[in-house]
Length: 191
Image 1 (spheres, rainbow, N blue to C red):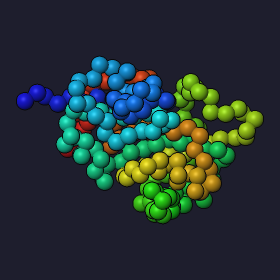
Image 2: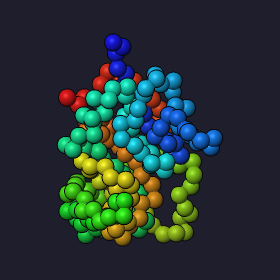
Image 3: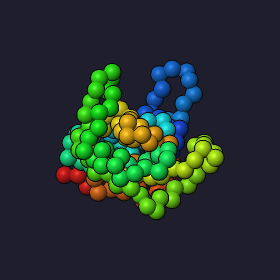
């Protein structure tokens, strides 16, 4: 039986968390970043506009371990406006968002203001002009992963997300891995 392979990547803005496209549309896919082995899959997904840490594996059992409810995923969100402590506390306690047309109360999570803001390289597609007003950054750490959950959480407390990075999964940090960078690892440190 061949040995499973595992990868840590920095998913760039504009890429889809998949390897094959079933229509003729030209999309940027993860397979363009590296020569991954057959049957490589993303563990969880990041939407097209979300950047940052993503695990890839050929082992479906590893995928289940990483997606377990006790495994933390930390995101840094740049939001419209200067987010305040009241909004952060609301997110920490759980907020009601819409998932598949139904109300969903998010689990309590960790959240904090990021001061000073993180220093990420400029995005290839400009977010907006500085004349639109100030922005700020918040860290949100989840143990669940609903569709566009972080974006929905910041919006419901009045601070829509402009840019979003996943910076940590469990004990693995994105660190200084450049956008599009790929590192093969023996495992993800999750028992």
